Length: 99
Picture 1 (cartoon, rainbow, N blue to C red):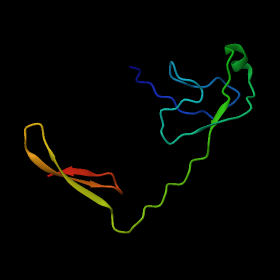
Picture 2: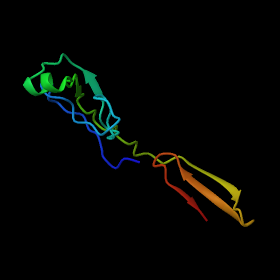
Picture 3: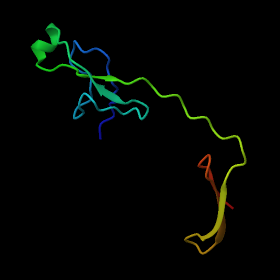
Picture 4: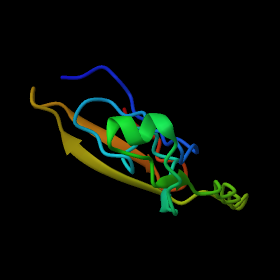
């Protein structure tokens, strides 16, 4: 398993900077989105034979969280050891607890 990461690069004159096995539009950052652009290969890209042809799209503003009462679901479940627990799942935050 590779430990290297790939993020998008804005320079369309050079080869893309990617981890082995990744393509120019790949990214390990879940907030990045690639958009295709017209490449403009520089000397290094011509020697290597590849050029970056994507750029990161502008980041979207985070959605505003509803400040009203959170929706919560509760249900009982049985653990592998036979113990019955109450699961509480907050649908707004994703937080889940077992008691």
